[in-house]
Image (cartoon, rainbow, N blue to C red):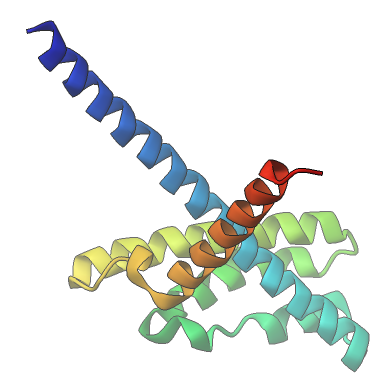
Length: 147
């Protein structure tokens, strides 16, 4: 009887650890997307000579989000554009990251309401996870090899 309880506890712990991993993976994906958008803003400033406001406005398009792009644009306009008029890049990046976080949440809710497949099953998300896990495995393998 005790062994049955132990197996059940182990399964629960494994599920909890798996959920923790997926939560961390989701946060990392959001951070990755925010950094990509930040690079887009920075590239426009450097190559086209835009100021913060113009670069943020131009970067506020999300064609890769498909039918969900309006959710993303709305969050961008609400959270990022008001911060783009200042000169503090730290505040702008924080607003950008908050907008991306909220847009991911909005998209997930909309996907669920429409009956669409979850974001976790999208090629972009899977590709991000594959690349991150590959890097993690390579780093781990490097630590195991004799120096």
